[in-house]
Length: 439
Image (cartoon, rainbow, N blue to C red; front, top):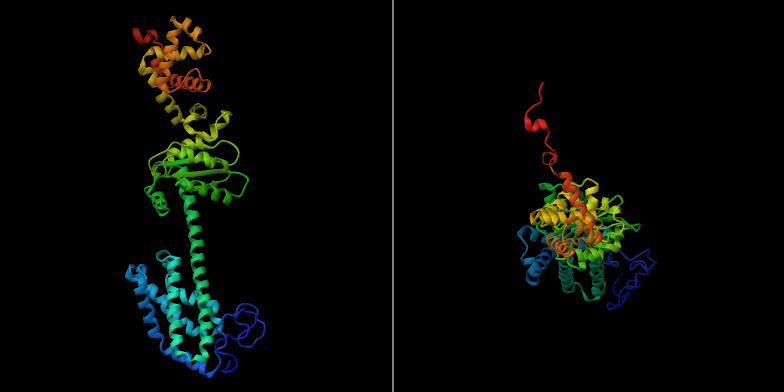
């Protein structure tokens, strides 16, 4: 373009809508990648003047960052130097871009490649936008000062196009960083959940959990169910969304046909799980007991896993169901902690309260939960049986007139009888009393 071909206040033909190349006027294959035809001797002279002023432009840009943005002033020295490198690269690359329009596709590497990848964790995308805007404004002001009036439109359009390309390059840098970080976090999350399920709580697991923000988060609850037929990514997204609405953090992993969700923080995980249940597949959804911190989550996971295996033995179980509500079924699959809990929560309190309560519970369950039959067997008045049943409910928390709770107590009494040491149940033989038998 030469002076007089077009008016200074109008952009070159086709530059406004990208329909034609600003230099040749021929239809372009896509949006113009470079400045709109800096071809005249005067424009080349202006470009050389800008190149001689590059040092001053860089100084001005960094001073403007210092004056305008508190986040820049608060950065450590190393991070400030990285940001300064990006600003300097942005200015020098603009001048090279004016000479070589085809360099647009390399802007991401040339401008942002001067700083390490870790910078995306130091400054946010919005701060990067502030950085790009400040550099572009510095260049634009210098162009307005140095370019002759008949070149103002061409240079303004060049700055505009360059700022667009740099903005797209910055967005791609952060998008790539977010994608890589998301993939890494997903792998790390799966490793942490797998370690919890296997009951590992070593330093490596704690370190990985800390990297995900779970260092001191509590209380923690593990929820286990079956994965649905929908895409696992969709289910995981829905679970995170629901838990996030209740202020609860999640670690989620799909392990074959099993869906494991670790909840952290918040104060009512049972209420949150009731909202999560529709996003599990058909079958039981088992809620493990809450533990104070992630390092103890293996206990919650073991109970939830055991409950999921035992849940088919209770077809009428609610959904979700607490692992502790499945203690009888878990005892049937040889879950030792469940057997111990049954004895500790039911049999031991009955023993400590007096033999009459344990005897009444055993008799009441044996005769088919009949008060009159129990009274006859115990040689007491029926009102005495009723009184003792109320005391049993107070001591254990289980009402023997309820079929399900009666089943739990019956199982606890049976487990306690099986766990009694043989030395306490074996009848003494004559040899034990009178000495060894005669030879």
